[in-house]
Image (tube, rainbow, N blue to C red):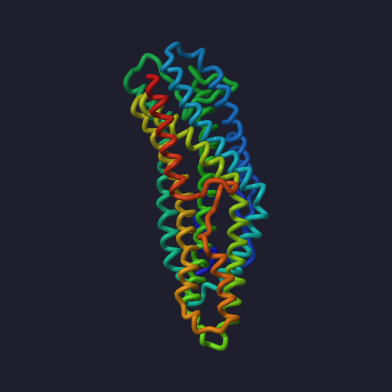
Length: 393
């Protein structure tokens, strides 16, 4: 098994939207050079994603003139605001992915060096790889189904209206967005808007999945090494003449893991903060929109709600697993036969135990921890906002 095996699904979403693929020393597959057509596909997706933010803001500005019903106005505004939340997260993740590409590749180089240690029996690489792959695969399947429904909904609605001999077609595109051309009542304008949103959605979902999978990748790698460190501490025999050398190596190893984890945390600080804060507001708006529109549109909002929930759950799940795995180090150091070692050995062990007193956890700018506890707090706040907005009806 190689480190590259953990990056298979990241490469897959990069290929789907023609995003630049990450490379590092030790990677077996060669770097894929994108031709002009692939670069144009990426540029079209990125430009439409950035414009989608502007289009949502412009559409929200003109909503008041489209409806006289205050509840309908609030529902339409909630729908636009929730879509704006998606595009903001996607745009910022795209900027993060491109601007920190070199930094992330340096991190991958260091994880590649550490991964060579996992060839020893103390590491349960296969177990963690299977668990990680199963979670990533299920997430990819759900995102693919959501994207397919989201992009096919306008065509399905138009076909249904045409077959039902409707006097007037609705010309509803995927999300309420303003375009500088006529969409309502114009077949070319309608299909142009649909194609633009297909490119925007494809890039948005692929970028969000890539960042989500990359966070899971770093989390599972740190879990493998913290678990392996704990297992090696359990097997040290303090009576062995080489015990101090083994312990010295593990102290250095533990320090390197903490430094790597801190660097990963700093790289995703902004991502954690934006994702958790935006999702709280967008989840409330999506839940409110579900209660105000027809079945097809409500199902679209339900899928958006589930996308936000699973996106944050995946990050917080990785953070929680990292807390639990890093918490194994202190018990492993305490429950070996340190009392049979000499004074120098016990002092060295005490240094490691003091560093491992608290399990390591990712934080959003040293504020809230990235954990299931924080995840549940965001859901609770979103529900409180939803009940408040819902009471206005």
